[in-house]
Length: 345
Length: 152
Image (cartoon, rainbow over all chains, first blue to last red; front, top):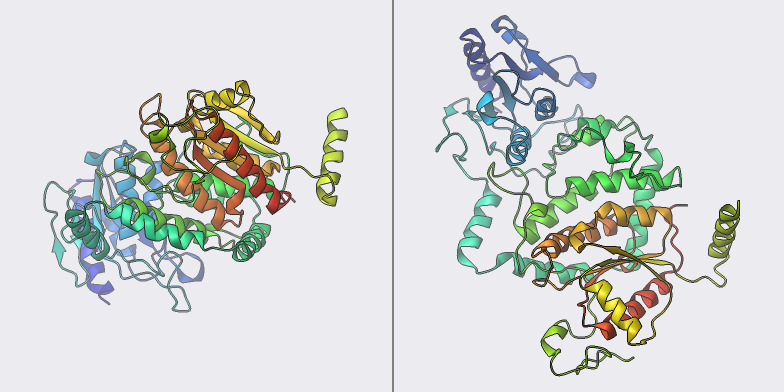
């Protein structure tokens, strides 16, 4: 892999940015983490460039620190892997950061690795190798590329995104088609399988110590007061243990639905090894398939739950009687529902 | 004290499964489904008394956390109903709700909550009969699943 070539280029760009005072601060990586992994590095002078690190242990999602800086305290730069860049794109689309105060050093990434050589949390099935938003891009062979169109356009669309775009151009309503397929699959899930899911979720939650490290590590959790810590309304169920944990995790996932960039920071941050990321991972795939929205791929885009289509599929909705009973209102009685449908009163 | 006692009684009934009746929370939008429920009432259409209706301004007003909390508190089923898509009093509230609920249902299913515990549907103000039929169906489905064991 071209980590060395990329690192050289990264050092050159960073040194240039800091020595010419184009930015005040660069968020990058340095050594010193557990198991030989990298830790975030806040670089303020060009002398520190030598301490910078770039290899397959640079896992932290640096976008999370924009919660603190937000580009409001002068111009800052950030080394952005694809997942970091996607998180930044989500921030941009949600109006969280000042794009003009942020210089994004995009860097192509082939996936981070754990100490034992397996893919890091979040990198297992990642199909995004190129950051969707950047000011300068360092490719895997160490060459650089400039963005087309005003710093927001992708030089090369990732494979999946490209297919999606082609489909939208051709078919009339690809989301609807997908929805129908999904529906079939969805309905065959049996209760027994469901029981296994419940058992798995419960087992994982037993490990949770409610330290909220997953929330703090997540770029998407930026509420000033998390719903779980609010007094009014009090979201905590009276059941202190399982109910509370379930409320927190499912509530958090619901807030992340359509926004999660699958960086795996939550799982890495967990001190007890709770692995429930599979739930939000599935939701991310579900949103992409059903609504064609992949979080953070378009800085100007919207997330799945902040938009709608009048023909959205209704997966899992209750179907009773005739779905279009409204159309038959004139021919039947609204009171008893006997409008030619098979409803017995 | 009394509340606590009744709660304990309730829980022992739940565990023993004798005389257990499902308790279902229904979130109904003010403009269509609540009026539909009202019409079922004025039309004297019988439907099971297991539902507790909570009136909300719009199905788009229903925070998914309401549903999660209801389940975490131990309610046996949740039913949500609003205006038919295209008929929302606030024009697009139910459109956002539709996506939200589709995703929520998938999320709950991933967490192992039976799909039949949570139901989403549309009932207009003129569909009193349909409202009764929906409630019947929901109660039946939840009854089949048995008591909610999530908070245990």
